[in-house]
Image (tube, rainbow, N blue to C red):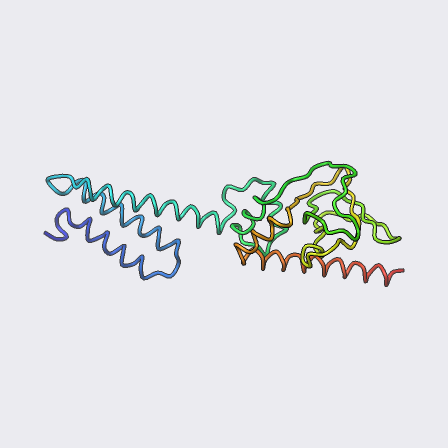
Length: 221
């Protein structure tokens, strides 16, 4: 028994296992383990005089479990399976990994063409956090009013501080908006601290851009 007979399958499978456990990448490890399992199943199926069905079944179950986890890893690390629309949205949340973004997007409600829908009311705590993906909304703050264009959060300060909105925001008929229930979003962030960190970082960048725009308007006035 050795390299000259059917046990070569076992030997190759064992070598692949050793290589798998020597690599650092989890996905690479699982791919190599999957290949190693294939050699073991081939041995159990073709080499013994009596087919080792129990061994085949157990190795197959381990292979299936491995494939399921590999699929989850792929979804966590890649945009595989995302629609073109979702990929375009993901480009605006580039500090999230794909898995984090999928969870955030799953928790959102999409609003489209909701003309004159009041999103926030100045001085009142809003029930939702919004992100304007396309179109414009109308912002009123004290005596000032102005349009707010796409790629901006709405009600982000109120959400961060769990306090009242600093402005009244009304949607227009061309507005495409993502909306998150504030309570549900906080629960999501409590469950996934990495999403909480990524969302706060994205909101902070949004606030910095708004502040920069305000300063430029003052300087130009």
